[in-house]
Image (cartoon, rainbow, N blue to C red):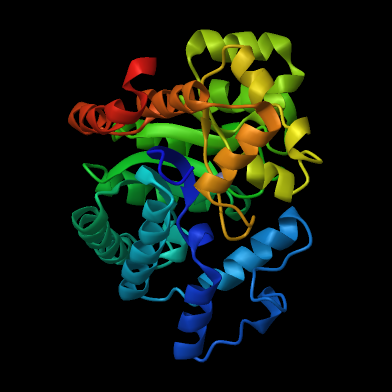
Length: 331
Ligand SMILES: [Zn+2]
C-alpha cells in the first residue's frame, strides 16, 4: 500500500510528531515528559479528554520556530515514506507563540521553509490550515483567525477548528470563521466525531464550511446525508482515529463505506497518526481488509481529496498529473 500515491487532508502537525522526536526535544530542553509515554515509548492516554492533555503536554517541548522547522521536516518525511504526495496540516498559533501575530509570523516562516525543503527533497506538497481550538473559547479563536487572515496566501489556504467538540457550539465561533472567509481562506470544522449528526448540521449552517473533520456521525441522520451529498460537503474521515478513541468498536463497525454509498464525498486521513498507532498505508490496509477496497476505491477517495483540497488550480492540476499513472483509468 505504501506505493499508492496519497492525498491527506486531515493531519494535526503536532499530533503527527513521532514520539522519538518529542522525547529527543524533551531531553535537549530538560523537560520531564515521562508521564505521557508507555513502557514501549508510545504516547499513552486513557480517553479523548486525556488524549488532549497528553497532546498539549507533548506540545510544551515545541518552543521555538526552529523546533517547528524540525517538526515539519520530521512529519513530512514520515508522510512521504507512506506515499503521501500532498498533505494539509492543521497549524495552531496557540502552540506557536500563544496567538501573538508577530510570533506567529516567525513560526510560520520556519514551517513554510521546512515545507519548501521537504518538497525539494521528496516531492511532497504541503499546505497549512490555521486551526483554532474549541475548548480555548471564542475569544482565543478570534485571535487565531486574525493570525490566519493576516498570513493567508499560497501556503496558508484554510481555516478550521479542532479540540473538544463537546465545549461550546459552532455558532460561538462564527465571527472567527467570518474573518477567515473574508481573507479568502477555505473552511473546515471538526464535527460529528463526538457531537452527533446535529453537530455536523450546526457546523455547516453556522460556519459555512465546505468540509467537515470526521463527520462520521452524520450516518445517524439520513436527511443530513442527503444534504451533504447534495451540497458536496466533503468528510475528512479518519477511521483509525475513530477506532482508537472508541467512537466505533472496530473497523467493520465504521460507517465509512455506508457514507460513501450514500453519495457523500469521503476522504481518508490519519488525524494524529502516532497517537492512534496508524499510518496512511495502515489505514489503506484496514480498508482493504474490512471492506474489500481495491484500486478503484482508493482512486475514488484520492480524487475526492483532490477535488476538496484547499489549493490553487495549478497545484491541483499538477497533482492530478502525478496521480494519472496509478489512477488515471478510474477518473
Ligand atoms: Zn482532527
